[in-house]
Image 1 (cartoon, each protein chain N blue to C red):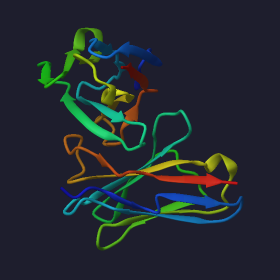
Image 2 (cartoon, chains in turn cyan, orange; image 1 turned 180 degrees about the horizontal axis):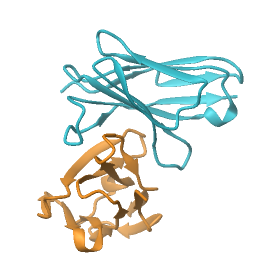
Image 3 (tube, rainbow over the protein chains, first blue to last red; image 1 turned 135 degrees about the vertical axis):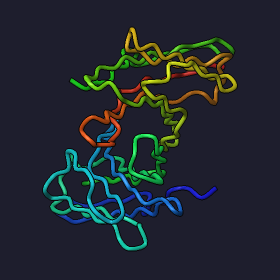
Image 4 (cartoon, rainbow over the protein chains, first blue to last red; image 1 turned 90 degrees about the vertical axis):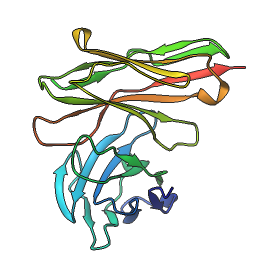
Length: 114
Length: 116
C-alpha cells in the first residue's frame, strides 16, 4: 500500500538559510499534518491542512509557513534557520479531518542546521 | 489540563519476557481518542492502535494487547513474549475533540530494549 512520501529525507543547512520540506500524502487523503520532533523529544504539532485550507495551528514559529496544493501535497517553508530548528520533521496524512481518521506518518525529514 | 504521561522512560527486558508500557492521560473532554505509535530505530512513526473514549473494550492483536480503563485514565500496552524487533520507542498519544482540533498530543515516549 502507498505510504506518505517526504522529501528530502535528509537536509543540511547553515544558520539563516531557508529550507523547504515536501510531503505527498497517501492517495485520496485530503488532510495533512506537520509535526516537529527534537532529539530525544516527543513529536510536537506544527500545523494542519484540510482540503487545501489551514485547519489548525500549533507551536509553529512565525519564520515557518506551509501550504497545501491542489494535488494535496504540502510544503513546509522554513526561513532564517536557527540551530534549534534541527529536528526530525514528520508529515502525516488522513482521509478526513476527524479524530477517527487515523494519521499515518511519513518517514520524516531530518533537518540539521549548522 | 490535557496531558499524556508515560512515566517509564526506558525499559529493558530479555527476549520472550512480557512487558507492559504504561500511559496515563488527563482531559476535561468526555470524548477523546487514544493512540499508540511505535518509533523503531529507523525513525518512522508506525500507527498501532486507536481507542475511543466510549469504547472500553480491551483489544488483542497477536502478541500486542491494550487495556483501557477510564476509571484510572489509563491506556496500557502489553507485549507478550517480546522479540528483539520490538525494540523501539513507543508513544502514547491523545486527541481531544472538544476544541475541534485534531492534533495528536504525545507522551514523552518509552524506550523499550529487548535483549536477546
